[in-house]
Image 1 (spheres, rainbow, N blue to C red):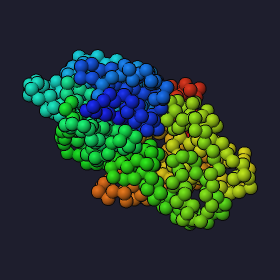
Image 2 (spheres, rainbow, N blue to C red):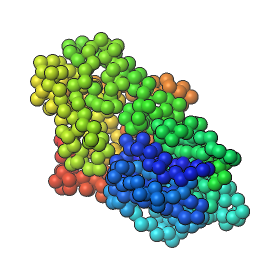
Image 3 (cartoon, one colour):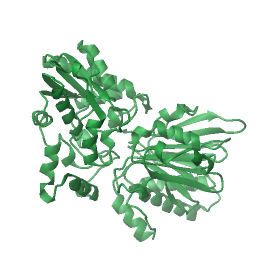
Image 4 (cartoon, helix red, strand yellow):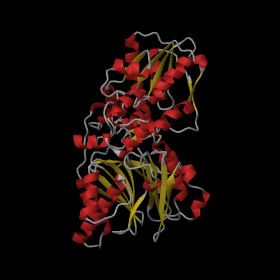
Length: 506
């Protein structure tokens, strides 16, 4: 996940607009926030662990001055949880470049070795984003050696091209470049989302913005132009001109999990409405519910992202739709809590059952997905405590069986409740009376129907097919990473007992 946003204005300081835009992207990351601005001479930066509203205050408008700026909300999938790894990251040469990144680099260690050993660069963190920034800086420096420094835009585009040829994985990136402008680019598969928008400005030139999701544009009066193409780079110079460059030939293969859970329902990603995709997911799920022959008294969504799915399934099946689970709006999304123990503890804070909707009834819970199983398992217990006769579960997505290596915190098989299990085993694990999963072909149809020009989606967490190619050594390194070791400590598990304990925990 992670959310990134950049704004280049012709007329006024952009801190307040970046702040507002990041609030619209807060769902993409709750661990840390950062903003950097540029006034044509100096950068001004602030970043720390915490939500946007907690990291920044009104006084920052007096110090984070500049008509160009960008921000980031972090959801950590690589590196540590330290505040030092909050973005943006900076290198002072060439030019002076700040970078924010959404995604995950899969050949990080290889590139880290080249950056530190071959190019003698010092890295201050374990973040793959800092590695990506330094690779880009190296490649831009190489372009300067060949082309000279008369045309910095040409050098930046050449640097992006060479970076794409060297770096593997998922990356949507925005950069601030001193004396040049704002640069954005998207990996050759377009796995993570990124779009560009424009706003009319007085005088010559227009204002531009880049964002992970277009919901960040409207609040600041921007109109979306389009999504960046896979393998494309766009630069907005300091005079407000837009320069486009197809760095490498791309093959758009967006992450399908964006439409299941990550993106807001009011977002449009690569021409596909997240909301309508979720409605279509409800349509296909409804057929399974009808074919089951189960006696179901009411359909209850697990709030919030399962609501469109549940509403459509209820409409088609004729089963009453009820809001039986009340969400505490002041608790964050448990899936992106930075730690297993915190996720488990937060479920009871987050949801509460309405006894009248459960007492003596057979209920079908519809959730957007079941990843680790912690949340839904506790919800089933809550439903039974509220008096439910039978508790059935339907997942709007297929079983999550494989690690996601492109920027979603599903790095290890051991964490996934569906890995290595049949449906009946998962049902028993979750304590449900019946369990339905969306078929993968139906999920692909639900997304592809919104834009038939998208030939394929990355479905790696469901089918194990990684579009960029990932070797077993990398997957093994994820299973044995320091972050997984930390999770072992959180659960009080040592050594070889890890896998069985993780599977038992859900």
